[in-house]
Length: 236
Ligand SMILES: Nc1ncnc2c1ncn2[C@@H]1O[C@H](COP(=O)(O)OP(=O)(O)OP(=O)(O)O)[C@@H](O)[C@H]1O
Ligand SMILES: C[C@H](N)[C@H](N)CCCCCC(=O)O
Ligand SMILES: [Mg+2]
Image (tube, rainbow, N blue to C red; front, side, top):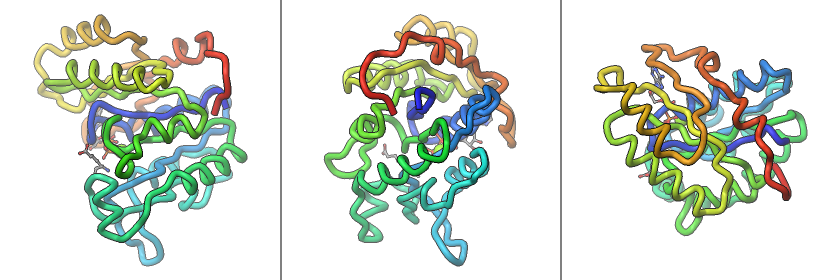
């Protein structure tokens, strides 16, 4: 389970799903059986049987066989596209960590690694008083990767996020840029500033891939993460 990871981002809509799917593919290319997971998804549609979310479906289809049932990939499927605590309250759901841990353990039992996509940015709570840090800790602790959506303002958001993850006592193994804004001015200089200011290595920069951002794994280099000296202690 040394290759399992928690994927967070500088905000919502910054490329976490694009990168999470790419991480599943990149780890599979290294010969591992890998599952993707989106424990809490707000913004779901009813397919006639269950509520489901496009991020979770993308992660489920990226998963190595045996493909797990949807409820393991996404234990909390909340209809409205808003903060989880609001989305949960709207359908009278109590969001707790236990069902997420149960689903994660099941995935980790059938696969060698699990890529877990978080919700929004790092400080978006899962529920009142329940931070994502608590979940990442409980699932491992899992190491964390930060997806930086490359747009104006991302240097500040990336530095704040990195500081918060490290302050929360989690291991931040690297960051990955995703070029969500094709109009961003001075992209190379922005990347240079991110490389200089962030205290962890860059594991890749996904260029703007247009309307169908598939195949992002070819822009990742996981060596600084997987080749690192892992800290002692329990791992997810
Ligand atoms: N490198 C890229 N090239 C082109 N489009 C991209 C790229 N990265 C992300 N996008 C697009 O930006 C949008 C947001 O990306 P994505 O859904 O991965 O973000 P997210 O952080 O997972 O969002 P959420 O918080 O809703 O889970 C999507 O439409 C996605 O296709
Ligand atoms: C609906 C959206 N795509 C995400 N699933 C939820 C983002 C929650 C962000 C909460 C916040 O930080 O204000
Ligand atoms: Mg997503």
